[in-house]
Length: 158
Image (cartoon, rainbow, N blue to C red; front, top):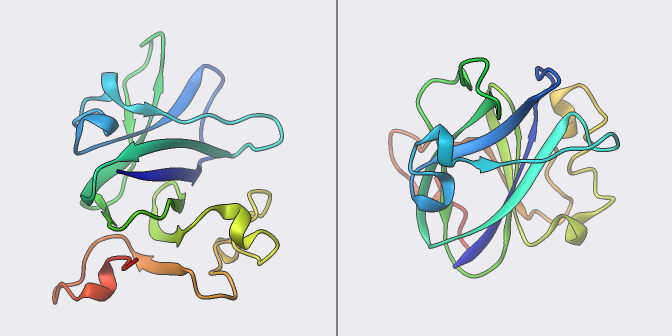
């Protein structure tokens, strides 16, 4: 089992709405919005939402959604083509840094504290330039979907 922390920048929420991650496997709700993993935020963290979950090794497919707990509005699914994918291998914790609607995410082996101050992610910044790999080369960047060739570079090797 590997701990995965999801961090997503999502500014298009209204009061009463929350961001969730839903996807393959029971830990991400088995594609059921009612069972999705709720992310949290706060005055200091907004617009970044985050949560950690322990998942088995393998490939996770997922998307971010926005929903209201009172169900007064329909679930809003992230408008990206296909599903995001994350290859979970080894035993090091993973951190996923994403932006709602943009599949150019970063995945870091280890914790964000390991690369703190390295310019990895600044939730206060507005541009995608805030999603930078750390100087030590811990991050995998690029599309979250495997390339047509299915090369091992599409998956974080720990």
